[in-house]
Length: 112
Image (cartoon, rainbow, N blue to C red; front, side, top):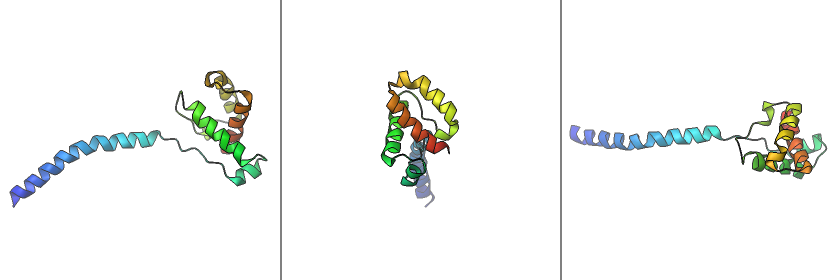
């Protein structure tokens, strides 16, 4: 009986040894995911913009900005600081003024 228990424990440890790195990899990737606020109809009415505009701004922020670096939560900076950051990054991210405005509209509803 103790031999069976030993074999079971041995195989468990062998499998567990392979599972531990996978758990840490998953945990690390999960920690890197930025959960961005999804605008609602209430946000759109409160800020006098369409919901579609806010969703486009969110999409642009996610696609354009994450192509070079990790995304920052909109609440990390003030609206004035975001305006400076996006102004500096506009050329690098290859966004035009209308796209910049869409991103800023999305950022503004998140920081309030």
